[in-house]
Length: 237
Image (cartoon, rainbow, N blue to C red; front, side):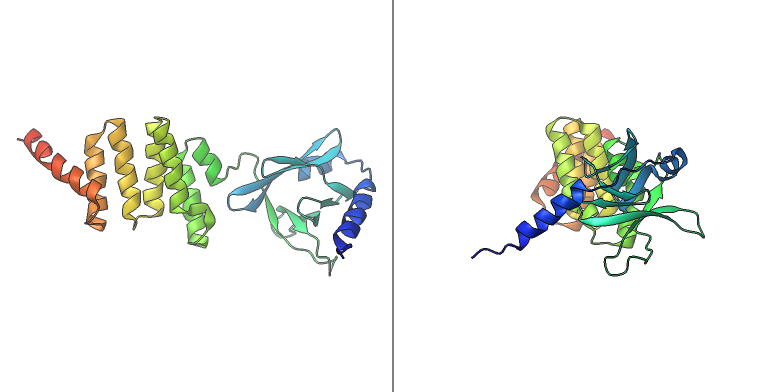
C-alpha cells in the first residue's frame, strides 16, 4: 500500500498557495526591498515587483511567491518562508529564512547587494577576467574546495572557446585557471594550447615550459619545448 503522505502534503500546499494574501506594497517598501540578494558566493536572488506583485528570479527562473503579509512570503520552489529584515547596526538589508521552530528568531541569511553588483561568473561571462579572478580568489580564500572554483570546469569553458575559435576568450579563462590553480601542470598545458591555436608560439612555449617543469613526462609539452627551443635560439643570433 502506497503512502498517502506525499498526496496530503501536495493537497495542503495547493490550498496554501491558493490562499496567499493580496498585499498592497508601499512605494518606499518596494524601493527598499527590491534588488539583488546574495544567495551564495556566485549566485543571486533578484527581488522585484510587477503590477504590485512580488516576484523573484532565482537560478534563471521567475518565481511567484505566496505573499503572507507585506514583510513575509513563502517560496514553494525552496519550500521556505522568508521575511525582509534590516540589521540595526549596519543598516544593511537581508532576506531572512523564517525558522519553523522559532518564528521570532531573526537571521541574516542573504545580503542585499548594490544594483551594479556582479558575481564572479557574471564578470567572467562579460570578459572582465580580472574582476572575475578577484571574486573567485575570495571564494577560494573562504573555501578552497568550493564547487565554484573547480579546475575542470574552467578548463572545459576554455576548450569550448577554443573549439569555437574564440581564442582571446579561451586565453582569458585559461589564464584565470592558472591563477586559481597555480600548482596544476594541466592548467598551463591548456593555456599553452590556446596560445598555440591563436598563433602565439612564444607564449605557447612559455606555458608548455612551465607545464613540463611540473610534469616532466608530459609528452605534448616535452615535444613542443624541444622543437621550439632551437628556433627560438636561432632567432636571437
